[in-house]
Length: 397
Image: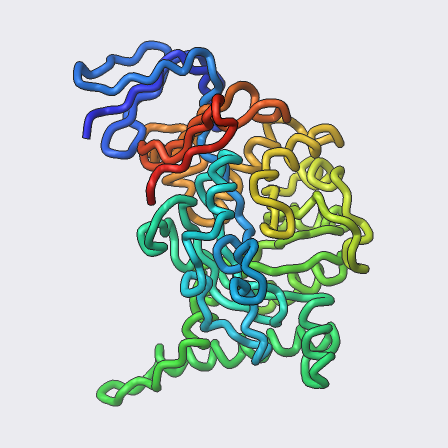
């Protein structure tokens, strides 16, 4: 495969100062970048003509492919609402790469997403980080699993309260989570301290999934909006010693000092929603800036399809309007979510050795009048905007 060279670009690496120059791609990875790069004789050269070149954007909390748009109940596989503990279910098993949302992601300059189960259960299941273009989901995977989803607050309380079974309260939800972790710790101990010569205990997929969290292999992805629920999430994480990520964090600014002191990242959003339930009464575009100012590492999320995924960058733009630092806003949709997903060695910035997930923008992506013009994943062009047809052209999967 010949090398790809993008010249004449305003390059924004995210980790490093912007410059006007060249990025060289070989075998799907970035091999060189700078103001003076030697171009191989057989390279395919693309003159950016001053367009802005950024790493592909990343949304760390979506239901892309498991909650398909335009499919009604048939395309909704977000929640297995038959048990409050469904740690063994895996989002990857329900992702349909043909979901039109993947095309919207490319049009929005998004090349990586994390796909989560829903928040109806106290423990919802395993998440997966994938690229946004492909025919077979296994070929799109960056990391599987990338986390274990859990929910506190209104959703599990409502779902199981309506069924007249536990957990129907916040204290019941916390008890379900604690009980599951105690059982998982006992399961791990039985395996770790099994008597020599005797067969180990029978496998349990639920306990194995929880064990990945207890051993620190993957983070605990805690859906929580209200400040008291966030504090409960911290309390349980401290009890069991696992790595915590706060998803949504609508009232996280009220306990920002606590989160900052413990180094707990917040995936803030969605931000383009109405205050449709009590937990969202404090929803504000000023929250990202307030969290960042307090020293909390933030990522901005859409929760697609709650907010259409191609609006990810616009949430960042409006957060800047309400006080978020511009550089932090870019990190919140690139390198920060990459860190949360454990894939920052591969994506999230333009650097030698990383995957050539690149997006040419017509101008500054934080200007709402600019668009993603050309998108590359692994150095392959997967999307191009057709100015004549006024539409995006997606490469065959």
